[in-house]
Length: 259
Length: 319
Image (cartoon, rainbow over all chains, first blue to last red; front, top):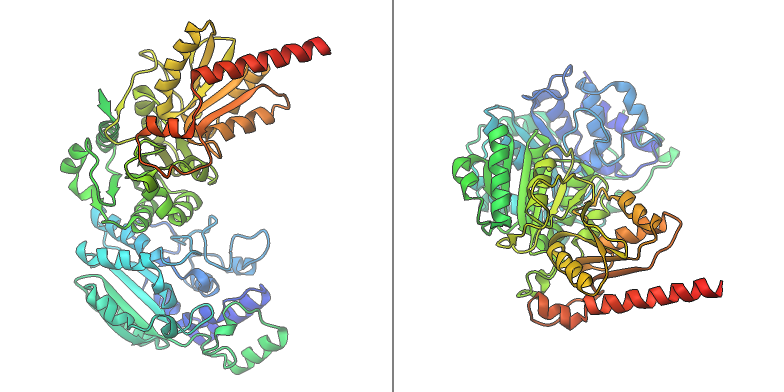
């Protein structure tokens, strides 16, 4: 099975080859996406639309390369599809959207919607008597969207113990340090709204898995502390890399550093 | 008489009887007439609170799980507050959202920002969106029923939720999604109306008749997909066309008809009657606001038809 570090290398190749940005947004979320697809999510590769599958809502769809790669590793999509990543005429956009792709549950892009969609799928599970769980991935910058808090207010009232929110807390948004824009602590905010809150090292697969699997009796948020651009020193903690495309020299340097 | 809320309530109960996939989401407020569904299916009713964006995306999550979800609100809150969610989680994702908007047009004049005079324009521009604007009880009942089979979001536009839907069509009239309905025959001019201007247009036809003009009335209860063929037939007959809507003259029925006329490659005298490109910064009911805006009525349209007739005669004589 692929390792997170190998995923990181492959994702860098994908985004560089596709001349797409958001490489650092992918790199911070590698272990989260790895843990979800390869350790936690209940999926049936033969049936991407299996009604009892766990739902993963990529609200932060900017990490599409990592998601498609993990889907291929989990057998949900064919590996050859990865060659279509952000390629003209393909259906693998650099910001995750379905375009008919099997196994993807939502269309991302405008931020802040995924937690609400997750409430919808979690409600459907309860009403249909199915025991699948819904996992939603958002970024910490994304939590500046008002809709996140509309959803955060409602989910505990609905008693959704089958809903898990994962925050990729990489401390950077598009162009700024997240805490310089909104300084209050995310975990405290969710806890105040009635959520069960777990803080984990977002680059430790075991810690993430423990957080995801921790028993819950209400909506649960796993705040994964990560580094934006993790593994590539020139990108780490650098807001300027958010949308930047890599040169071949930068790609080579990035891959060398990840050996 | 059946109100808007009651006809929606009937639809919810009928759908719930046929299948167990029907949900009803509100963001505060109460739609009188839907109590029966809420009481019999409490687990399929949800009040998300005053959080319209959350409501649309939750509905999309349910719809993505195979459900059909009705949402009701004032059109302004339903669409404008949550437009991005309607666009991405509704139209782009092609989910089975049934967006029931009330207080459309100038029908709710007590709150000036409540006026929804751009709702047809914005929904009509969304790919995958179906836009329905029922003008009487037959249109409301039949089109709401046909919405069930639509694989994608539908916006259904009504005036006030307590509005009593009139009976304009003859009993037994078949209304088909995407098709115009001819209400009266006539070959002096054609009047096309949509939604709650249909009974107004029907009264206009009688007034035109009293003035000696036989006006063909078409009801256009589906704004998207649009029945361009019905407009093309009027153009082929050379009939002057008037549109009547409680919506901005930009982007709604008038624009859709103008596009259909233009694409025939021929021209006919054409007049849009609706809300001018202005907000009403004044308090008043819809009749007051029509006067405030100087909205044309039958006398003005008769004058316009006369002018066009003489202009055409002059052109004919000089050529």
